[in-house]
Length: 216
View 1 (tube, rainbow, N blue to C red):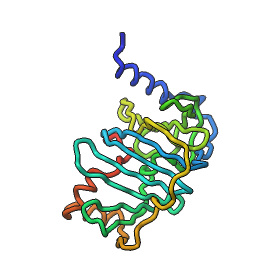
View 2: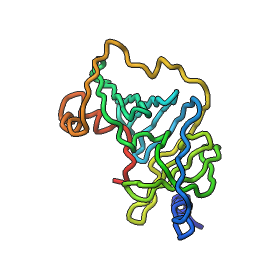
View 3: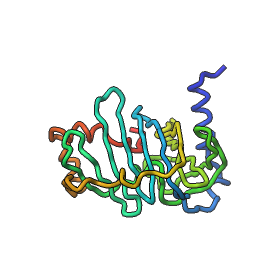
């Protein structure tokens, strides 16, 4: 009798199985969210995530496992920008270009539509993502554009890097997506961001921030 882990891995491998028929499927734009929602999710590294979506904006709260710190990010999906709030520096926020892998519940791009699945009691369609940089990637996206689970294959192993545990479709308070006027925004490049990792109050946050969709 296979264990639960073995059964889950077998199911994931089935989801990621490819053949000539799949490769010949046409690519289509991935569905984007059509309305407000909030989700609770778990990342591959064990971080708990609370997220809310409103009119192209994504609010993300991440709590790494066994850490007394919470990272908050406000993502402007259309502009491709992310503002990272500093819990240890309440009057400062970093603004940067959004790494594509951080838009976990609202994926942009194209993919090949495969079959159907179910996550957190919600029916979703499996999409084999085009141009995935970290290995073959399949995301299960609802018809109204909410990505509920993302799995990745790397070196023969299939990992669930992100999975929603609870979804609520409801209007979200627009004010929670706004930055207070007394917060100083500092625009940084990705290169500069790496250099900030040694600074007190920032380095710890960056090392435990949003869960990049990477198998490493």
